Length: 406
Image 1: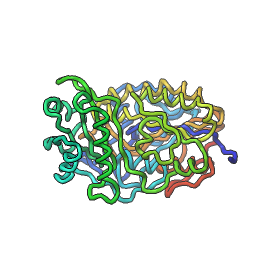
Image 2: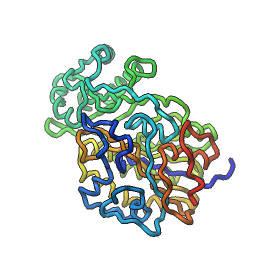
Image 3: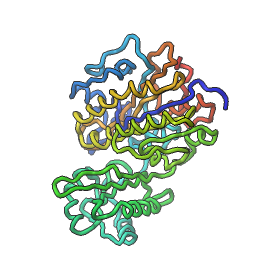
Image 4: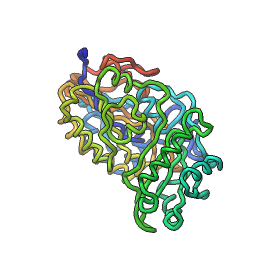
């Protein structure tokens, strides 16, 4: 393979950690309230005294904003290049954000089901599973509230709890002692089959949401599984894989891309710090001398954004900040680290849904000679840069900033 500027790219997605409302945020809503007031990172910093010395040293406070991040000063001599990126695609969900990062332009948004799923679909699930589906939770619902409200009934009857959100997802909550994991996964696989491209019920993801515990103390487990559509076209992951480069995934990345273009998966995270552990393990693999390591840390979104918990969200940011020196020390001299997000989920905003925001781009390399601020760009600029570095085809959209990383 021909020599590249960076031998390895380590890409971390801090799931939902947006950094300010996008210019078109007034066209996207939480209920009836537009997203133009959302600012995930900014409002967390306003609500909680964030202590993120390592993000600050890299240049977090230098990201262009109309209002500075409280308590996070600009660095005169940052360690990295930073900026923010705008979404082109029509959506603010996980798959749209991730797929665009890897070069796809999603021109038609996935359908959502704000009134719940049609009766015909629920009956098909009943016929396949042999279990009744509760009709009452069949609507947009908080994932923790739905098991508090209907978990007791499920423990008595064995019925399925099916619900949705503002995203194009069908979620099935099941107590592990009532509906075994293998059975839950089999049901989700069937639902994936009947909601694929060409179906009248096209859905972005089917999510298995297992939980444990007793009435009054239910707890979701790390046995969640996401059953995603295959990307609508080849991504930069495919191009890297076809060129023979290692493409390693950590967390739900493998699920989001349905394994397309990924040739080694490090498995699902128990939590975000376990995700960092898996990332470090991948970085130390003897066979990983070049290529892409792609990591998703979902707790930011699932545990704190959707639950509107700025204090918990702040602690999760600080935990990752505390691991950055460990990650940076594990990097080779010609590696580059890119840290970003896939959408927003402002825990101070109304509702419990994602928010249409810019995403941060925070990069570090020991090879940098003159780090600073990059021009504001778009999500797919990340994959375009990765593609140029490894001399493979880029996606449908995106402009490389590789020549600016000096």
